[in-house]
Amino acid sequence: MMGSITFNGAFFSKFIKFGVVGGTGVVVDFFFTWLFKEKFNVHKYVANALGFCIAATTNWYLNRIWTFHSQNAEVLREFVDFFVISLIGLAINSMVLWFITDRLKVNFYISKLGAIAVTTVWNFFANYIYTFAQ
Image 1 (tube, rainbow, N blue to C red):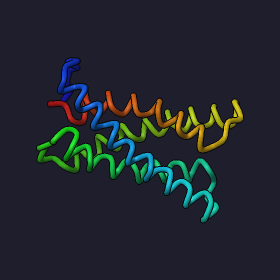
Image 2 (cartoon, rainbow, N blue to C red; image 1 turned 135 degrees about the vertical axis):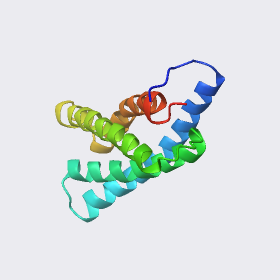
Image 3 (cartoon, helix red, strand yellow; image 1 turned 90 degrees about the horizontal axis):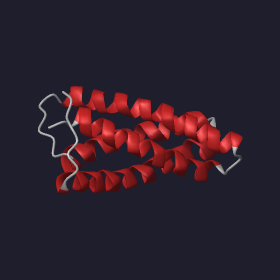
């Protein structure tokens, strides 16, 4: 089901909550990316994908209950929709991360912050319009 966007107080409240949840996701993402990359010597882009996927899972749960107050009985379908949007976000994230890290030669973790910022915009609008459409 596709929703529409009405730029009102409820929209901006959800955007702020999505950002707060995203902030917790950044912590989860960075921790697991660091753990896999630095401690388990996993390739940086694989570690990035693992951290991203773990954070996406926690973000879905927090966004479901707090940001969007979802009552959707089709929980698995909602999770799959959120995760597919997140995987598209991961592709965007990885391209931005690669460009900033490998082309612009910026530190990996600083680049990751930039990639997360770009991906957040995609994730919010796609989930607002599609996954959690009211």
